[in-house]
Amino acid sequence: MKITLISTASRPIEQGIRCLSSRLKKAGHEVNLIFMCKGENYCTKFTEDELKQLEKLCRDSDMIGVGAFIINYERTKQILKHLKKLKTTIILGGIHPTLNPEDCIKDCNIVCIGECEEAIVELADAIENNKDYKNIKNIWIRKKGKIIKNPIRWLLDDLDSLPFPDFDIDTHYILDKGNIIPFKEEHFEKEIMFLSGRGCPYGCSYCSNGKLNELFKGHRTKIVRNYSVDYSIKFLNSIINKFKSINYLDLRDDTFTVRSVKEIKEFCKRYKKEVGIRFRATVDAKSITEEKIKSLVDAGCVHITLGIEGSERVNTEVYNRNITYKDVLRTAKILNKYTDKFSINYDLMCCNYYDTEKDLLEVISLVRKMPKPYRLFPNALILFPNSQLYNQAVNDGYVKSIKDSGMDLNYHERGENIQRVNKNIYLNSIVIMFRGINIEKIYGSIPVWLLNILTRKGMISFFNDSNYLTHLIPYGIRIFDFTKYKILKPCYDKLPKSILQNILNFRSGNSMSIEAMPLSTRHNSNEL
Image (cartoon, rainbow, N blue to C red):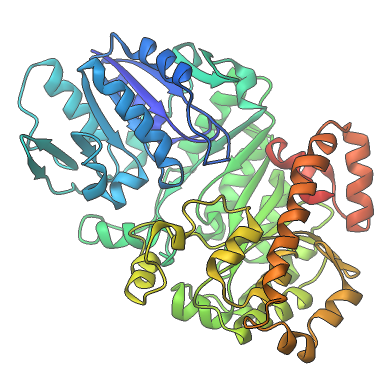
């Protein structure tokens, strides 16, 4: 049977849809993948011509699967609406339908919830053999005004039993500058993404994992399931042998260092020998040890990301993150020993309805205490529908419409997000301007001498939320961002690597290498 799977991710690195494709191919089906990449401006819609090209490619499909993310779901709805005229079976899956099946079933007659490798094969087999599929687990079906809600199945424990994700680009297409064309190796931009496991031990309230832990409770043996080291290395080795231009791996596990020292050592030893390309890893402040970091560095890790997210109170009481500032500082001291080996990125969330003045001052204090240099990425907290924190914010009266959640904005629209929350405007503005390289003399865009002035009690008291002058600050940030992203960034992106390195040296005190940055973020105005 001929099946078309459509990804709506902003870049063609999504692993989930590749896993579904390889599973369907193993079951004997013919599968084409189409990556409808439209960039990270999630407000951008598909043009009519782009949708017509997609329709033409899907015209002879016996089944169409569409992956959906909440952040760009309006694009997904465009696809669903346009392809309905084909009169073929369409199934909607992904994280958004998993968390919000009641809403998504209104847009598509068949919705898959959770991990769908087995469900989509059962559905395809049933359609091919003209059999009834109304009782397939993980599948919701809307038919004649009624909704059949099948239960979810037990999560697969042995991930190694799955075939490698599908990287057979001969059957792939991609939306490139308005045209859907055959996928080429160059579309990877020399980088691939790989999740070597599924699940997160933390289950933060703002994250999908918090809700997934609720959904899968009683339907799994353990929260975190990993591919074996042997599976991971063999897969990655097959990729670099197939695509000679690939020189960077985005290891996208929620927290790679939750693994034991033994497992990390085994992975790193084989990775260095059998894969040998630069990679990034996401870590957490609870599980980091010097021994683990040494192994990662030796294997070629050049980029570490760690989430701080909020104050201690907000982390524990609001985000359900059992991570203290003591943990963060301990980890930061370990990571700081290797700034000549890798780039350190810390993630931080602001524009949170539950932050107090004290919380934000604690965040500012922590940022100043952390050993430098490092990159800090403060982003606005977006409340994804049906996440635990979203539901709490609705109950507490903070979210009355989609605009209150931030879903209509891009996370990097800093001034607009500060105005949306309309609380702690002054301190949120300071924190959000820390974005970029932080060294002893400057924090992002704020020199330390200016920061000392801005954080005086008198200044904080004067620029309270009742002062109309305070409400002008986000407009200033919007002008700053427009100048930076719309005027300076296009010029910056065209600079040769040697000049980019000189800029980075100037900003970081000669402590960071441009080679420690993935190509997807190397040309980034945050380094200006």
